[in-house]
Image (cartoon, rainbow, N blue to C red; front, side):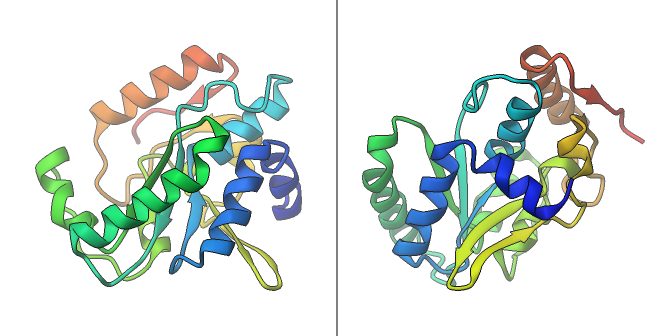
Length: 188
């Protein structure tokens, strides 16, 4: 699957397209629509399901050096109000703040990051290490592992950062229940 084929499939879900356009209008710093909502839309297109099938939320990452909770909370509220008409859950996280709470929540260390793409790099599975953002020139797509796993319904662990076998098994079991066509690769 090429970048353009991935974008075409991901944007068959009008929620993805709306979020990307609205993020551009909001001008949040280094803001990307990321992860499961993109890949799961592609899975739905490839398996002839409704484009929103199985998508529990839409993740937005941005990077603001202001690591105060008040600043992130203001963005969360702004985004929630902007997207309430969509009738979906949009999860917003400032990647500059993740290291402040991650270890307490997940029991794993998490270094300070310097960009949103560094947050994408740390996803549990390689097939979800994808982000899209709109720019003046069109769309940026960040996909360090490419699009083949998404296109071929393959889940494979990302062993490079903060990997938890327990979380991987839990996440992929949910996916397998919703998309039986998914091939889940084990921990290498």
